[in-house]
Length: 493
Image (cartoon, rainbow, N blue to C red):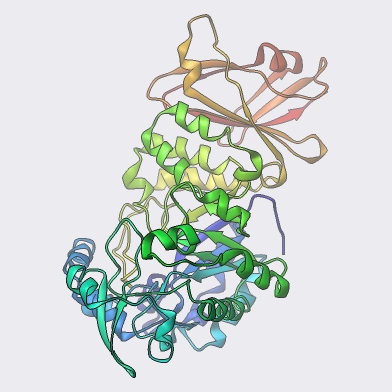
């Protein structure tokens, strides 16, 4: 399979995908029914990874909560006015076993899907939920000591965080899974990382899962860090991730771990074995629509940026098309996906779907395609296929005022990419609601008296400039509000 320093990933809501396919073929669809043509299209778009969300077995207990929680029900009905109980399949993160959900096919269907992806040069990423399980996971009955327990006093004072269950050893109070800033998730139970026997069992689970896929997206990965676990539960715990990631890679050296992580804990998790960590901070700064904080984010060390998963939406965030006005959306996408790191796209993002689908549902609404946005993303993905963006050297450029007092140069953010065999490309974005100008000195090697063609990768235009002028005073840019340019530089001699 092809590999690149900066791959692209496409996240798919598997249950919703198969539900739509079921309506097309007139019977319940499984992974085996996914047409080869759909996989071919994903490969043709230039993706390296397919991240299939919610493939693992869930149970009746989690689904019962999903079907009865008033707040969640209101969200479902807002999304699906014609909601039926069959549309509620329970959260894909309330897992009872890391085996393929029986509704998605027989166990071997997952291996067959992976093989079909591999035939197209695609890798498979799946979920791992380290913090909690469903209430009807077998461990609850067999190993209640693997979970965080509670007292009658805690149950009385925090009923949103604890539940009493009838277990073989008698009535037992256990904690719902949660993070320290929110109430518990009532369709889950909290695992206890202070128990070394549990940590060993969890690593065994990871070793089994790693035989099914090429990488894992680890849900809320920072919650099991000892300092976070101690703060949340008052329980001391040993480090989990360094041992877990090392043991998996002893069996599968190229296995990839991606962490969903917040609270400025990205770097610690990168140090503990994660190949990629969510870059929520870039996303939040882009939503702020101010150029300076976005530019300052790119001052970070390249070692850190290379391991950042850059996204504009995913199953947790609102849809980009509903969050960013059209021109801001395109400018944000250029900055997100032409920076170094893993490029994370979400099903429906390319089409501009405005409605986010709950992870508790297995059906989504019909949503219109924004043809202009789709055309934009197709151009963007075409450009990202160039080796200079997949394996090249990236640097942030300085945008100099076009004349004395020209403050709008501060609104521009620009990158240079240099690849093998002299490949060069420039990305520039005016991240502001006003027209902006600057000179952009380019890091050309041995420009001399050469002429360069600047070919627009998002359009058909091309320009010729002397190498000397591109070095000093630099490429002159005059971009409209939220405008951008992506140029491939071709040395003409």
